[in-house]
Length: 505
Figure 1 (cartoon, rainbow, N blue to C red):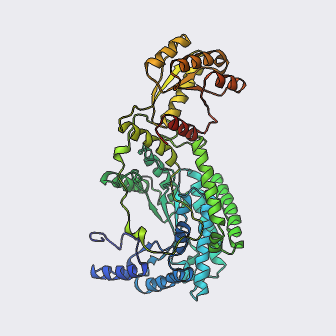
Figure 2: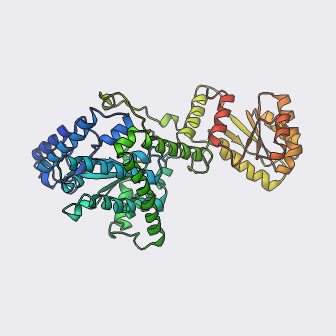
Figure 3: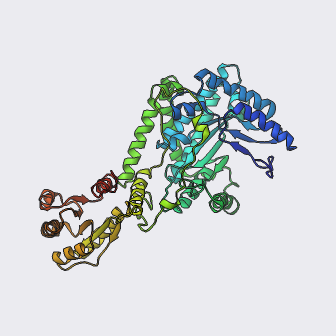
């Protein structure tokens, strides 16, 4: 695996192993066999029993056995790989499960403190323990808050370690490995992911990350190819070599906005950290469900904001490319044998790593599957009539709205009469007709259009773009099936249409 790699110039980081103890011992032997000086090699392994508890609902062997393995790993590292950090605190799992940035920061600090308390309680010095811990965070698209989060993390961790009275001031320095977030990445319009990961890598660098991993833009639907891997590497190279982000120790220092944001994050995260400590520490808080409840509630709220488009995911819930097809590009996931390794049965609540765009992508993929099975792609016809400005604005809104489900949308320049619009919609064999006009004109235009459409084809879905609340019940009585507007839950509304059209059960 390491053939051709300069293991002294390049740090090595491993995120999977059946047994980390055997792996560390084997890595030392391998490096020696290569003629490399293992004492000069730097890197980390992803040993994190607290995250295992959160993701699996229990420890692997037992709480005591799993945590004791950390002591053995530290002992091994001190003897064989002094440049390796052997405990990883995975704050990124909270981020990619939909947590807030404050929760990600506070729970990561609580996990790190749990490890410190356990290790020092077993006789290790705080200098031994802290120097073997690396924090893994994720950065999302909230550019300035992500910078502030990382700066606050360093400040708070130093405060925590200082309470354990380290001998070396260096022990209070947090080692941070940042990976671009997966929570906000998309399958559709995947090249937008390149823009997202670029700002995320910038946030990591400006925030003071020691290590940065930029994930390939196509990671969520296929095995990354040479192109996407090369682009991911080059994003870092450009930021380093052309933007010179590595030449300034703290480029955000002195910025009033970022400094005040850092202080706000530190204050909020510290309060949540203390709440976890009041529960008895991170492990006790997880067993009580406190951590999972907060993360899952945050995830629920963030998904709702994406569903209602309060949070925009470009190309997915806003401005979708309706002609884009991704079904054939998605590679089937290969089951990892490591996932089937025996462990204790789930006993506690868990958090789930997923992506915010999952719901919309399920709608789009269902439409593609429906069409590939020989069915007609759902067709939306925009019956634009009346006030020019309002019909154009609402036609644009409707195109984006139904495009999120991958429907075919036919726009029109505008019709002189309701009869002309109804005739054109019927000739187009539309499944959904959206009446686009002004609220004032809906009182007369919408009932007439709905009545004529339902008389000709009862199963056709009649929609009004907007929500004229004074006459909503009147329009429903006239045959209008649905209203789409800025306050609507786009995801739930489209799911209803998928069911009515038979695309989804």
